[in-house]
Image (cartoon, rainbow, N blue to C red; front, side, top):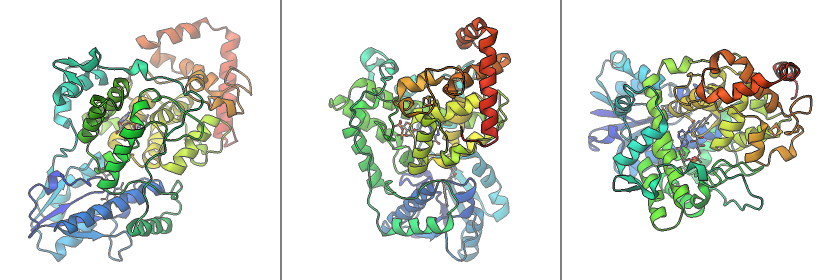
Length: 511
Ligand code: FAD
Ligand code: DLZ
Ligand code: SF4
């Protein structure tokens, strides 16, 4: 009798561990365990989402004739860990082999490598073939290359899957339409609502359970509207394609006060736990282009995120772990300020993005990168602290995708493996791409002094502080020329403002 263990982010009917499953003789095990729910203190909405999606998936398997053993979180006999639950079932059933699809996170793969010895049973770990590029394929692509640029990887993937191709070349003649995708928000945008699922009894039970067992976890549990089944996730995808894809490209980088969802797809939650598979999302978007539902800049932009960035960051993760986790090229050591948890800051952009993160377990890419991440980079916050925050606050967060985005893209902590230069920016960028600055206590046009936008002086302080590490970067030459041209008084003012601001932040004063 085989035991197939299915994890909370493996909710796909096509899962490799189910491939040779005999419903008459084999069993499936799924368990809600303390170890997974608390290895970081996940946002309440994320736990509710994963548990509800797991319960719905298990029910679907049972309806299809699988023998599913489902361990609920508050089951009296729940041991609280995956190995504990596997250990418990093998004492009750004549299990001869354990099969599992490779976990997506390194910590769990390492743990599982020891299971066979600990449990005294063969444990087969199958490749996770839900991704479009395997770790081996990525490592062959990376071999011998000086730089691992996403753009070249993405072109290979376009060719491999024949997506948006016109014979050997890209449809429209260009691989990338990003230059058209940087429109600031125009006033009067009417952003369509995001997908809102109704609760059923299973979700109601899970919500009560999360409220009871995780009261001190970050974030608002209600309102809860995530899709929790494959059918609902497909409906969310279709709604994106019909209503938002058309303007996805134009407003991809735009941020608007009290508009958390903008024209993004909000499918990361569903892709990462297996309710959607990446190729079906790509193919539906491509079909929308051919039917004239959405223009090429939008469709190519969306496909680049899923076929390019998503697969690329996973490739980097498996290529570079475990060392990647301790990377700290810029030697950033500061603690994460408390306002990342409370949103209690006078910086309106930060307050907006943190408040929306608390409410929705979601923020879109530019909020994550150019507001929340940019601040952490400029203020020199330690990579461990920043990674912990990102891994727990977003409902789509798993280490394989979170870590390269934070350590590589946001913090430049890998020294430039993923990004060719730090994504550091002053208040001018945030002002251009959002309407946040109009409602801020600070003045984005002021460069120094107590009323100045902190991003302005922190930006130059960051450049000056990291001179030894960044001056040699060819893409930073212009910045260092500008710094060199500054008067001593100007440089002193930047340093003084930054010192005052960061000291106040470290002392937990409201800034
Ligand atoms: P859309 O903007 O609609 O994009 C469509 C899809 O493309 C996403 O669902 C996602 O699957 C993929 N995608 C887009 N950008 C990226 C990227 N940079 N890396 C990987 N996939 C991408 N994404 C996660 O899935 N989990 C994370 O934990 C996560 N952490 C991030 C942390 C930081 C600091 C940054 C800058 C980005 C992070 N991202 C993460 C990438 C991206 O921000 C999210 O995928 C996206 O915001 C999810 O919202 P969406 O589904 O509306 O995406
Ligand atoms: C995210 C998550 C949570 C909150 N809880 C569980 C759980 O109780 N049981 C489970 O099997 N999986 C859970 N998950 C998803 C796992 O953390 C995920 O499978 C690993 O991090 C590997 O990516
Ligand atoms: Fe953010 Fe500065 Fe604009 Fe305020 S002025 S919202 S701190 S960028």
